[in-house]
Image (cartoon, rainbow, N blue to C red; front, top):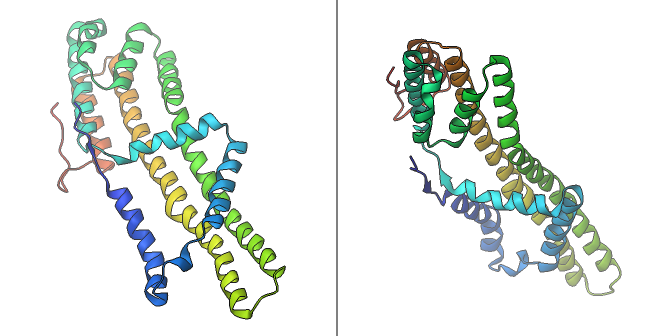
Amino acid sequence: MNTSKIKPEIILVMILGLLAIFAPVIIKTKSISTLIAPHALLIVLGGTLCAGCIAFSTKEIIKAFCSLKSLFIAKNNQKLLYIADELVEMAKISRANGILALREYSDYIQNPFLYSALKTALEETDIKALEENLRMMSFYENKNDFKNVEIFEELGGYAPTFGMLGAIIGLIQISTVNTNPQALLSGIATAFIATIYGVGVANLIFLPIAKKLKNNLDEKLFEQEIIISGIIDIANMQSSIVISEKLDKILRESEISRKGKVIPFAA
């Protein structure tokens, strides 16, 4: 069940954000050159990324940027409903023929975590140990995602500092040059562009990306929590009706909806 599709909205919104920030200046000065300072951008981006590579490994930084492709994949709002349906169907089979009867059913499961969780349940008979194993499995599966969020949050904290550093360096360079007042004012304006770059990169790119990754991670953790809860109930030989009502309540409270209406799954 692969119904994901590409969504370019994030790039579009970032472009609109840049226009909202820089367009008024361009309109007033009738020139874009006043906002272009490659050396300031180098200080901000170079310093931020180098600081990130000190705080984290280069491999972790690369993985974090590679994870950005997930931001451009639209989520299927009915995914949890399909998972809930599968859990209910598995509960019916387990109650009728025993949990080992789910071995054949596992071959049709497309969700990787649900597949692994069921395999674990078929091998582990102790309920407490099963729950511990499933939660440990969830932790290790999402370990890199937690790290990616942390990296972009840190980059968002470094960028404004290097923006200020770029401005200070620019002012120091200006103070050593004896020239006309107009040139000094122009140099000062250029120096402070570094601050704009630092604050802009942090608040329009790094921090929003960190928040988006965190939101996606929260959705993934919620999905896995539903799977863990359902698998444990199945291992406890709960009836499909009880599991159906429990999952339906969880989905309703979490406002999992389509067209503004919650769609209950079949029990």
